[in-house]
Image (cartoon, rainbow, N blue to C red; front, side, top):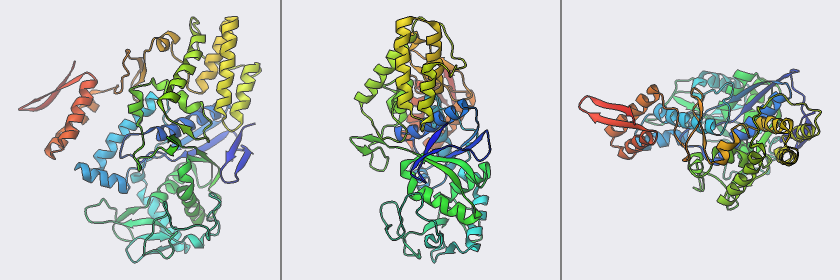
Length: 474
């Protein structure tokens, strides 16, 4: 049976879904104001693998991963660029979709955007206010009163007396307690806003996930996931909001993936030590990046360097070498096979992908020894569960980079050079031309040049004339 390490109980627990045969899972997704870095990619890949394994066990999985498309960072970046919030977020949602597709990450069943659920957020805030858990501050914000929720700290294991206002706790004189957090933010001049019972404003970050998850999965669901850095205060605050408003258990199993580190520091945009997925794709095959992420247990930290990526490339090459010369396709798995049984046991042990991959290498050695097609087929079938080994081995071994188009596009094999931008439909090209025109009008020539170069790299030539900009494929 599947066991999951539950951050709430701080131990592995046998997974028992609320509804037999069905799993409802929510994962905190991207705040879309920049390109995804490898830390974001790890979240996407880790929970993509979890969903694949839950499906392999026969569960019907409903997977929700949200998009935060309104917050302070987004507003600040849009103002710096001289563009609307909608234009900024649309561009980076498109980029996120491309990065995920290239890494073989399947889209979630639902991908709600925060701006589509503001009315629901207002309803939950009103309910918290009526229950005495929220109050209007002198500065116009609405805050959550942490000390009035008895269970606060149960996810992080922190007591209220131990907690202090620090790096991830905003200090504000308008708060009754430094630990209180914002549910509704009064809009500043020139900021986007929604009308509400508390005046013009916008939702705080934490309330977004409480509302989007409950709207799509119900007030009580099975699994909630995200990066380790979200455990406190974000997920702690989600519990306080959801259980405070609904008066019932919010989530049964909490999963948190470890950090990607650079020189033993967490990869983060705030300290500038991050590498975007696109930067790494320019040097390494996307499947190597996915393999690099999966070969570590999802809860363990992993260290990024050229050396670790090179090691991942060499290891993946060994697996593909074993498949060379076999014309086999992935199919159903005979779980009574000793290799398959050990793979299953590893994955049932809190999605232990390092052990599962070790089984793949032992099976690859068996393929090299016996040359039996059935062993090669099993290797490919088990690899498929992890999103690996589905290409023609010759294509991989000859350095042909797999570039996967956005979900509406087709899978194809690119040439020897990695294709970073693929799947440019006429509609998408026209949208980029409009964005470039807006950038030029606002004198953001760096952004206009970037768009032109992006299209040129994809084989699309722009021609400016008296009647506007036209395009043609090279």
